[in-house]
Amino acid sequence: MAGLDTDTAASSWREAPSLPPEPIRPEITAASVRSEDAIPPPPLLAESDLRLGTGPIPASRYYSRSWFELERARLWPKVWQFACWGEDIPNPGDVHVYRILDRSVLIVRQRDGALKAFHNACLHRGREICEHHTHRSELKCPYHFFTWDLAGTLKWMPSKWDFPQIEEESFSLPEVRLEVWNGFVFINFDRDAMPLRQYMGRMARDWERWDFSDRYKAMHVEKRIRCNWKTAIDAFIEGFHAFSSHPQYLASSPCDCSQQDVYADEPHVSRYQAIIGVPSPKMRPPPSPQETFENVCGLVLPEAIGTEEGQLQPGESARAGLTRIYRKFYDKAYGLDTTGMSTTELIDQVAYYIFPNTMPWPTLSYPLFYRMLPDPDDPEWCTWETMLFVPFKGERPPSAPILKLGPEDSFEDFGLGEVGTLFQQDAEQLPAVQRGMHNLANGELTLTEYLELRIRHYHHTLEKYLGE
Ligand code: FES
Ligand SMILES: [Fe+2]
Image (tube, helix red, strand yellow):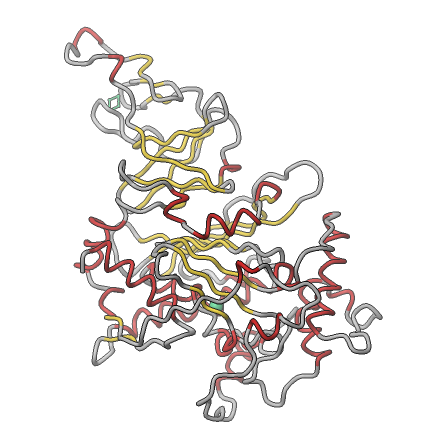
């Protein structure tokens, strides 16, 4: 909410009288709420039924050097990983430098519009060919000017007479596997890796519904933060912490009732779905439907509050009112006709995860994209990135520049509004989670069976990659 004093709101909630015991799962579920919607969600969003038990997770995976080195050796060289948004390198000769741990890859837009990825190392003495995002007509190493064309074919070399061992035709830059999915560029260092769409399994099929070619990158924030990359993943792979960390949304988001989806034959993807427009059962006394409605309406169309359209009509539920408001907003702002779109795809949060570190959200009102990158050498630091992909009217706007925040910077100081408050609430938890994990007497994390199912699911996949 505009003008929210985070500290005051959060601490007053934390110091509120104790909540009553909660031995019984709330009756409301995503499915039961959605069954009342005028346009129900597509069948592909139905709940999965896999559970993975309640075993503990060793906390040392989040800080030990040996686990970090296992990830370096056995995880990152084998997985598909998001490298960049294709529209950030739209023109032939645009180059993105993707860095992961101590390796880097050049993503290069070709003259025919395709993309290629190369190991970022000159074949002479190994210098990085490009050090940062740039535009080049050819790939010339700055050290002694060995030069390749954009397709990686050798064009020129200094003192050719003195390199009798080089066969020019085969002295091309070695490529890295690259595939583009929905405008997102992924790479894989493993030449024998399965294709990206096979890796993504059912998620690739689900997303045939959600086309991001009509989206642009409206926000890109990067923050260096003192926690393991998985500590940051965990904060965005579950909505369980929302009632306590983001209490300003209790009136409109029942996080205990979110839906978790994992599948036995899908090691690389999972999903959660948070219903919006229903109060949390934890909120005492419960808010009125109008208060629930305004809690979200204030975010999307604040000018409607206090007017007739900001008032629930007789018999209208908060979700129906939000659907009405959102449809109007997208029509007005983007000329987008959402008449046939399900309520869920308009107002709910649907959060997909691609193992190990990428989270794209497809629904129109929460088009978020998260990536957590490990620090090159320290298990207890990472870079947390958030992007926002929104529709546009007319010509494609340029991608937003990257806003880079240091460890001490607050998200609230950069004009991000409500989103800044939300991220800051997460940012203040993460370093304390990281420090606290060292103090666990038994060295174990105790997860819920259901609401944190996706954390357990990716740990199982991680164990398989690491052979542990
Ligand atoms: S290291 Fe690249 S030209 Fe010498
Ligand atoms: Fe959060």
